[in-house]
Image 1 (cartoon, rainbow, N blue to C red):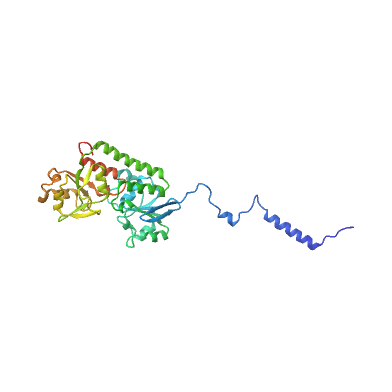
Image 2: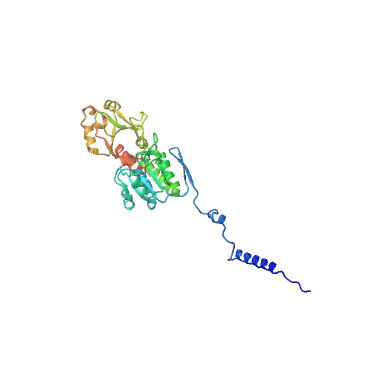
Length: 334
């Protein structure tokens, strides 16, 4: 006996077949919303976390649009070969080092000093690296928290802003920048190069039984403005000298000329910067009657050190060589 198929049932079967056909279309399973947000493929950058000036920082990826503020920060970046990641610089104290001149000329200079917030943000930075904390105030570029909220992460050269900084502190800053930009090997090589230069100078000097007594003259007429416990003091120590005012528990200080005479330095380091030349500073000291019996004045033993060389950056070999050649001219040649 012939079975009759219900037309309504047949219609339901046809609709189900059509739906199944649409779902299985293409060469494989369709992408779902969850697939589109799946874990990124292997090989992506791992976030870098470190502490800077008491703040915990997290860099999900290497910065691509960096602005450097202050010369020693700029030169650290250039020494690490990061010029292609730089979209601006600002605030030079001196001419850029000759070996970086060509790289530097391809990077926009935003300002002679700190740029305005508008000029800074117009460069569309994702990272700002400053030598001094003064770059990140309400009067300058804004606080670090404010900049982070605008997508600009920051780093401050810690060795320039801490008490009694050493060469090791400078090395750590260089290594931190290497981590942030994922070029650790390059940063380690740069630190090793600076260490190697220091060891070469120490070898030339040889054993030092009695460190030379050194007075650092920055400026001043009625009183002397001098380096006490600074990075420069650490550099002097590294090459067989002793700052006569290293017992003052601050970075820079005013001292009386009477105290300079009493401590009787054998060598005077003149910090060269500003409107007054190093030669003018030297002439002032030579013509002061009260200093006539000071050993360094009597023997006319002066070392001129540019302020840029005394900053906590990659100029350490220049500063060390300049100091050593002035203190031990028979052993170390300029």
